[in-house]
Length: 609
Image 1 (cartoon, rainbow, N blue to C red):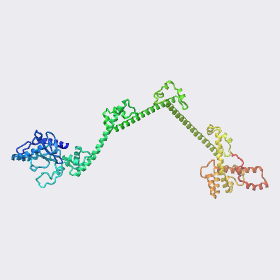
Image 2 (image 1 turned 30 degrees about the vertical axis):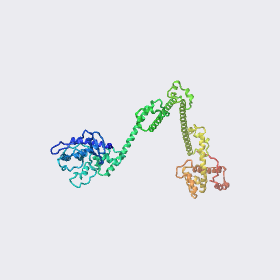
Image 3 (image 1 turned 135 degrees about the horizontal axis):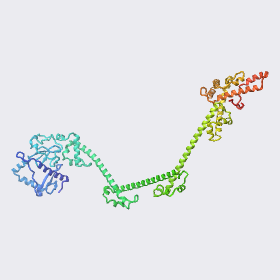
Image 4 (image 1 turned 90 degrees about the vertical axis):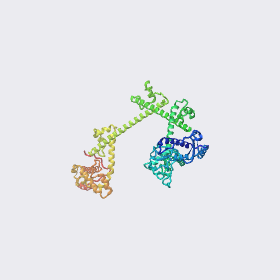
């Protein structure tokens, strides 16, 4: 005999429980509204068969004594039905008709929807035997919320009844269902709650969903098949994501539990050696704990084992590196202390340093070799060498900074001495022809001279010679342009502050002033106006309108011209020119007056102070 699926058996049990609750909740029997009591099953197995229908409408049969369910009609039930039909009397037929007319109205507390039962059959459609809905029959006691009915399911879609009296609520069923929820979203949420309550999997097919859920009143929360399928798709997508998250979290928890097992067991295992032990060597020790089986796959267990071993090896290496670093820092701190005590310098060697230490210092934990794996003798020598090199670098840097400071100080002293020489030149105490012997005594008492003299005995003389040499070179270059401008201007003696009549006595009394030099420079500019190149050179040399430079080549040329005229006048006085010779020589001398000799021909003269 074929047995119905277990789901049908579960439905049959729910039906029996529902019938019992309905009998308990049914109002007491009265004369006007008698209530039929279902016939109890006989004690004989053949008399205990009852007929039922599955959600798909297929009839099946259930034995309340043996608990057997089958789709094939039992022979005992067939014979019983035949005998009952043959023995039926008018009185029994009338009783059956009366029992069928004892319909009662109930309300499902879960959905608020009304259903009807006569003690044997339960239906959502209002039987025609019942009076209109305003009758007092509808005010009977209601069954508890959440009761499910198996014998006859409410239709999913009802066609409009052709006769108004048949079916009672055929046209108002949809509106009654819609009135149970505040809005569409709440109705769809109720439908999805049904799917969750029935534990619908993300891979369940639509046909299976219909078979499992269509008997629940929440199935009608979605009014159309399209809405149900859409809600099912959304539910299955969300449910799939939730199940994946749960599975992932379970794997994480399983991995953590497995790692805790490794952490607790392996360090205590004598035959375990990080980096040398294999998974199969310690598998038996691990398999004694339930956490070993938290990871279902053997390959995953082995991979997690080797990952844990590798992490343990790295952790141990990090620990060793940290200890070596701490030992190095302690040793360097010991060396710094000896440096402060004066036992260690940048010139120390390893042997001399060891000989300078006593037994207590040699036994210092920071310097002694307690654990060769952490700090060996070669490590100590390496730390010592690096420390001494740092001391040498610091000493070299110190010396370099001292040298730089000394050089800057000496340069500042030399610059101050040059400024002193320029000041003396401005006063006329130094000219390009001046020798060091002629000025040494003059500057020997100056502070600037003593500062450079401390740098070396010849430093002051070298600075003076460089000063005069640069001055001469600058004047030699400028003199050619000044001489050209002087010649272009006609060699006018009056520009030098000398009278043209040759009255040298008065000329000697005339003094050179800055105003005379400025006028001389302007005359040279005017004389060179016809030559742009020469004019630019003269303007640069004279620097008319700017602050007068005591080393100006214009002033030197001016002084040279005056000196040459004075020298020529003195020579004429010494020769005692008179009479005709004086007249004859007057013209010649007048022609030669003011003539500038070439460089090297002018006798060396000393400027009067």
